[in-house]
Length: 268
Image (cartoon, rainbow, N blue to C red; front, side):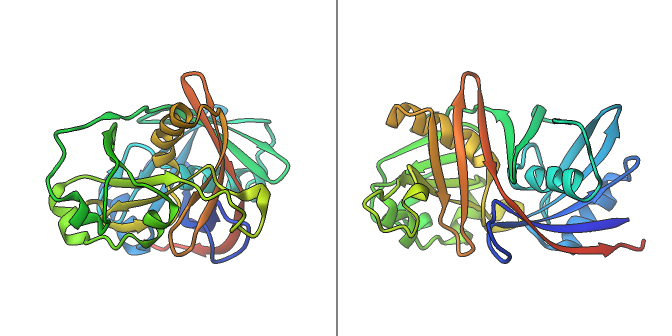
């Protein structure tokens, strides 16, 4: 099998979120896919197989399969468009979260994803401030994951999560706040409307670098809060990542760039 490692939501190498992309002609056994993801030890290893003119797609963390992953989908589309010479204007991936339609605009790849508006969630685990390493929580919401709103960008940046405590809750967690648009960012056109970080130690990923699926919740959340449909987003992980996002009816659009890192061969 051929493996490609791609930095997704990245403008340059060693930024964004690395994904292992393994194209297949037909499905291999699920335990083997999980073992390959464990061996790769990246946040996500993604597999896809042809389905007519479309593709079926599945994503695995080192510990478990998940139902939606943005950065690995972006990386898969990059491999198809730029390496495997896919010629059609759009790609449709069929997933456990429904069909995902991918297009491109110059070197940006745009993904059409489900919109998962989180609702206020009062029955959350106690002690979230301690688990997340934050001073104050504005509100807690939930769809697939817990979404925890903080006061400002610095609170998100300076959070010091206790991954053992987060793991005990059983939840994946997003922390988020409005972006600092006062001009601190190098490029004013990249000043984020909102920022976030994402923690999933229960699924073998303490902190994910850039998380597309989290933005399926973040985009409708901030669309309502800010009254904006088109926004800039920034994930404040150590590697960092930039997304262009849009609320579009019952769907969300998110896009970014990818950078090729490595091609390898797997022998089983």
